[in-house]
Length: 324
Ligand code: 8YV
Image 1 (cartoon, rainbow, N blue to C red):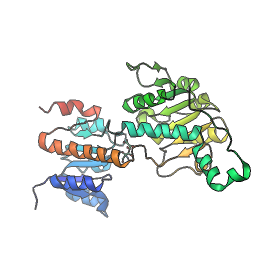
Image 2: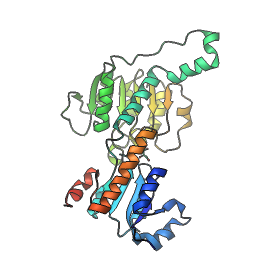
Image 3: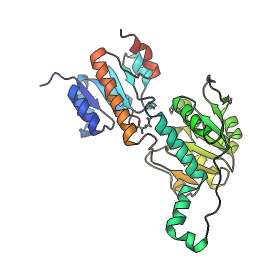
């Protein structure tokens, strides 16, 4: 028997996280259970804390078996897979890992933009395959200098992307739910933003409110020379419309880190030379994942000690601050 509280693990954790969590909690991984429903029916009432991540979120199915849940800590900034509003109403505090990944995700957005415009992957293939010796110089590519960069979603990561884009002498435009107090031009709609931009970078939160915000109309407004970069959530872009626009030459290219049905990627996208694909690695460096993991653990441990977390999601801020 132990007097450590029980923590239910739903998402991925690193060894470093597991070591820290075990110092304060008795950790149970839901994935180790052959029959998860039977386990939760039997044991669910023991858990006051859950650790999850941006991929697994927290579906209503486990929540209904967790009557004593008090805190959810998610290893990631996006929490579209967690009903934070509903949980806040039940008095549960949800925490996430903002800020520590801003630079990494912004770097990923710029990496994809450069790779698409300068055709990094085909150029690499040209160098490796001997095409350089056989056929001569690689065809000219398109510059990333002096472009109009449209950023869809202008929170912390969006603004970090903007600062990087300025280093490429870009004019930055943005669209978000409301204008921000920033020295960049706000554009009223995603279609107008796309129409005015050479590259459209998506970094808006996922979830029902932004589903298919980038649809066929937006892609057509971006146009045959335009480039779409998505480091947000796959749900933000209508993937079928994207495949159609790219294959019909109505859109110039795309750099995609996220997909509608991860880890599935449509074969049509895999076959396209004007597309660069990465497997949802926006924040996936040793350094940033360490910082995210530390914050995920810090939130749970602070909750144990003080009844509040360091970085609640906005829906839970009031609840968190109400704890003196
Ligand atoms: C991670 C992410 O892939 O932070 C997010 O919202 O999408 C990523 O950084 C994920 O949360 C880790 O599982």
